[in-house]
Image (cartoon, rainbow, N blue to C red):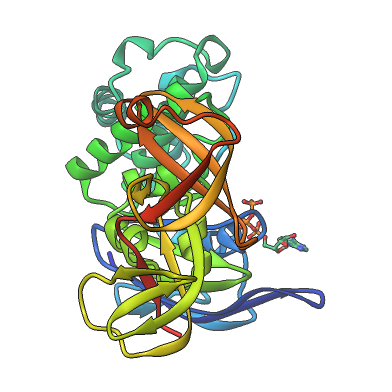
Length: 348
Ligand code: ATP
């Protein structure tokens, strides 16, 4: 089922939480709503669900206006950050719940309910936990059960609000991969809220970056990472260094340093904003921007070097492999030359 979001706005008192959101989500797509705290992710998800009414705009499911449809008629399944499992019911009964509370005519017979619940338990790979109670499960297991419960009623759309937010890093990572695989199997149109860029990039087909109630960019993981549309997206999706300078003859001029710009020829601009990721900064070797080493931190197999530009134009963060770091023998306080090996410009 496709979802079309048309010019949705929402205010709480005088605060405008969503400012004219337009977005189309394809049938079977897994989309992440990504942005900092308070940017309106949850509000948008709740409006899609029908749990919250928009002030203006429309939500279409499969081309049909659902704006005034009740939550129950929208055929959406939810999973929230704080697993809302019923504590006094077994795992089996939790998953069966949505089917049992259906009105008489639409309620499947008991044998069918049992079959469906076991199918779902197998799908989330927790068949062996059917008789346990939520209190006897780990956080990650509870979230998988919550997902099985949401799927029991065969929703056309699955909405997930920071589903792994309360779990520790390792479990989160496992569950991301697991969710991705599950989605590849089921192809249910899914919208996933997260403030964690890594999670969004890893799980989603497309990422919607929100900021201050507006969409900054919609794109694949590669698009938002490599071709951020705005400085906000660039800084939100991973660490980045910004450089002010100018474009002349298709090259970047930053202070006295001249760097080739890849790809399409840029037209000359007296004021331009460039960016490079930390792993795209090289230290040493000929010409470049003068800087002083301020801090050195190990990060797994890489080394992060924090530098201060000598022209006072702010800090630069470089990421070197351990090898490169060893080769340069960099120490705190060293005066070095840095050179981005790849730099891109924002259109002025
Ligand atoms: P977080 O990641 O912190 O959950 P979010 O991006 O999901 O943030 P929302 O929960 O959508 O943000 O909230 C967007 C803005 O609207 C916030 O500034 C919030 O304070 C405000 N807001 C949300 N719900 C209400 C409400 N019921 N009444 C008043 N203000 C609200």
